[in-house]
Amino acid sequence: MAVILVISAGVLYWQNMHEDAPEVVHGELAQTINQCDLIASKAAAELPEALPFQKQEKFARQSRVLDRCMQDRGYQQNPAWVSSAKARASEIAHAQNISQDEAFETLRRQAMLKDAGDGANYWRQRS
Image 1: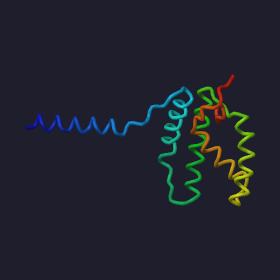
Image 2: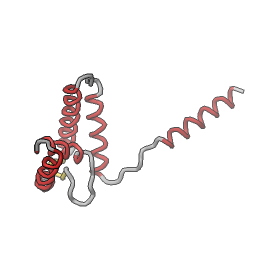
Image 3: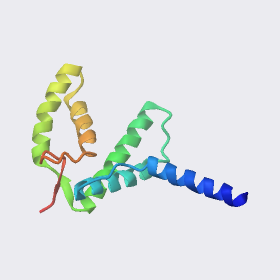
């Protein structure tokens, strides 16, 4: 009876591990982004989020840790991305009636976690 219970628990555990497995990440940049994102999430995990400014502090810490981690692994901000994002930020700021800096920061935080794969990445390898 105990053997059947142990085998059943093992099968259920194995099925759960395979169902929750993240999709396969291709490319060195995408893997580095995922590793650094995990590090950044752990760095900010203990920060409180009760008040709105605390949420902003947590986002800022995650962003800063992600940026430093990527730099440590040989990546830097892509100037071509910055140029195109400033133009997009201006359009978004006007459409949403927010500051251009806020629109740019939102774009930056989103792009930091993506591997566009078409050369329009936020990150580029240091030469």
